[in-house]
Length: 277
Image (cartoon, rainbow, N blue to C red; front, side, top):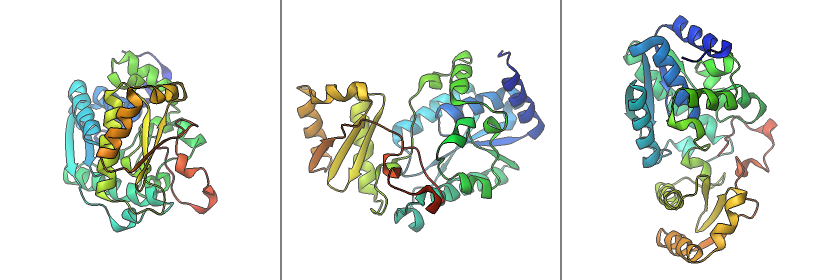
């Protein structure tokens, strides 16, 4: 049992809601929120995962495993189509994407008789661009972690106390964030990215983005890992693997991984929703 005022406030807020559905991705925040909701509400806390083209198979497997570890009810909603507004990939694509995905969570929750839908936004998200924050507000999705003032560091610490394997899980964003704004999102692009990133994960890279610029793959890894990519035989294996997936050119971004690298040249005042990817 965690003895902390913020955690106690979170449990009290969840108990007040009585019956909740959590938009559950298996990431750090939603896993912690589901675990806390399970503690507060037992079987009246349900995790709902939208299985869309934006979600890699290994992330779906993680979500299933984590929900099982928490012993929480877990529902997977199939949504394998890419909506036209999302497919065109405008700079505010994430706004439309969140409208679609959270709309599906809300619809499923209503079918279960659940009025309150929650997401894992936290206090740190107020200091950075947050994917589809406007969409979440418009849909009246609740963000209890943010409401009680929990930061990402606190969520990781509490997750460790709860023995959640996500306590040190790297940040993740949907596969759509690997495609430059204005470039149409296609299933074949997402498949290349997913398989490419899985290759790096299997090689031990914890932070990895394969940005898909059409026929070119731009690789972002943690700054400390950049030199590893240039060492043989790994460098040749990377090239061969990514080319076998359909990329013609492979390049390393020497700046290393940074959140939302496609957002760097966008004026936030002119866009509705951003992403961290």
